[in-house]
Length: 198
Ligand SMILES: C[S@@+](CC[C@H](N)C(=O)[O-])C[C@H]1O[C@@H](n2cnc3c(N)ncnc32)[C@H](O)[C@@H]1O
Image (cartoon, rainbow, N blue to C red; front, side):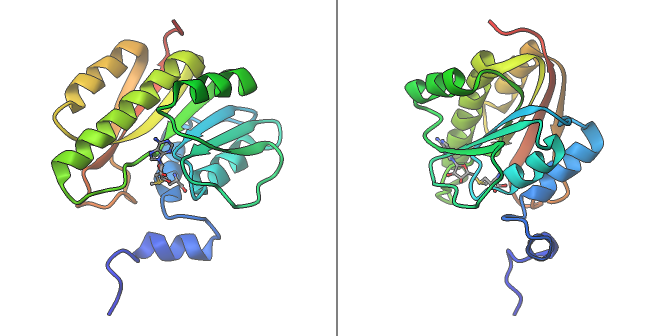
């Protein structure tokens, strides 16, 4: 019997040596919106096991920088312009250290997701908190005109958060990539052209 989670994208990721099938969500968004460019500095929140780091570092190239952050250690060996940092995005001291150590970024990505409980309302509430925190990071660490792409499990605060994002960025899209499972409440908010850092 075939495994329910081992779909086309799972096998494709294995074949193409990506660390997770999640890579195809970013790849699809990149194909359409070109948010990453050669030489960009990218912050990837919730980066483990590292497929978005693999993909974004191949786009930004050796003149760029990718800093991946996760609660879990990222063990994959990356080239020197790709840095893995273990930490909690909710930790204010950690956020401050990140900005002190690496400065501001052209693109901030967040694929952060809570450890799911199976209770949809609880999972979406925790996902919304992670999204909100990632949005907070943009205010201290994203360059003016930079881009932000973040996952959210749609819950009751979705529209309030979307309105908040629209206040900060010139162009905002809600995207459900093909590689995102149809039954999942996960969706991505893509926010382009950050108006200004406070
Ligand atoms: C879906 S996975 C990310 C997959 C990744 N984009 C990739 O392509 O390999 C979500 C990650 O969010 C991380 N995460 C959840 N809460 C976090 C937090 N408070 N701070 C940092 N990372 C967090 C989890 O540990 C998990 O590894």
